Amino acid sequence: MTTVTISKKITGGAELIIIPREEYERFKQIETVFSREREADDDIAFGRLSRPYRNKKDLKRALDFLKG
Image (spheres, helix red, strand yellow):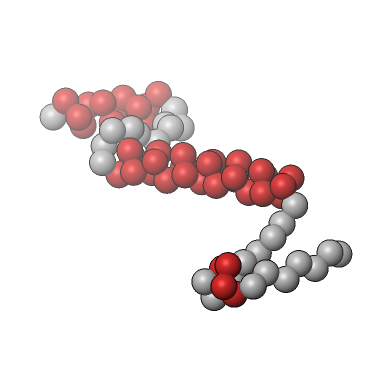
């Protein structure tokens, strides 16, 4: 494994981690998925979207509830 030392002057004293580009790209993909899941959870919480229904009976019950 290659070791790289970077001066604290460059990093401002912060910790710096270097990983291969392929791993970084995978991390970005995973973060995108998590971000979209958080958005969907917010949509559900604010009533903009509902969770999938197990059967049409549950769906009908939810629609009847929304009608009032």
